[in-house]
Length: 141
Image (cartoon, rainbow, N blue to C red; front, side, top):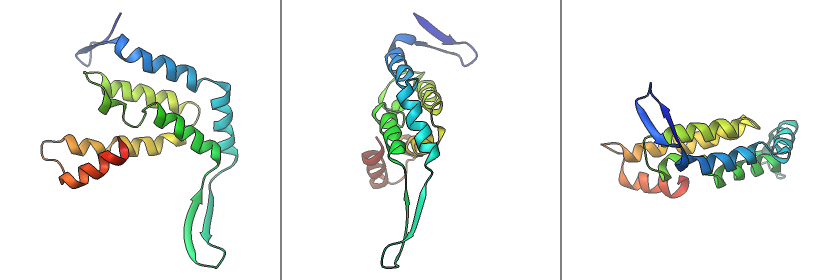
């Protein structure tokens, strides 16, 4: 089975990406996933500007459901799918996964995008300093 996008000028094997899509499609559509998203929305961020001694700490605490959703996204490689697969359609695949995870809770996608974008600088013709790339790739990919 082949899927194609003639306007973009490429064709890609649907079967290469369909395994990731079908699993994520089921996962993001579960009632449990949407319940976690509702919990994360009901219990917003909590700013802790000071510790118990009055020292400034500027810490932000997230509800555990938000961390669960982040874990689902990371475990399904939403932050680095394009960098771990080959072919013309990997960035389309990245977009599809991002779209599917945005349905239950779009706020989780901000950190995913922040991990996906900067790693591109390590594959440019004149990349940033190699130590910076090593640091980025170790932590994001």
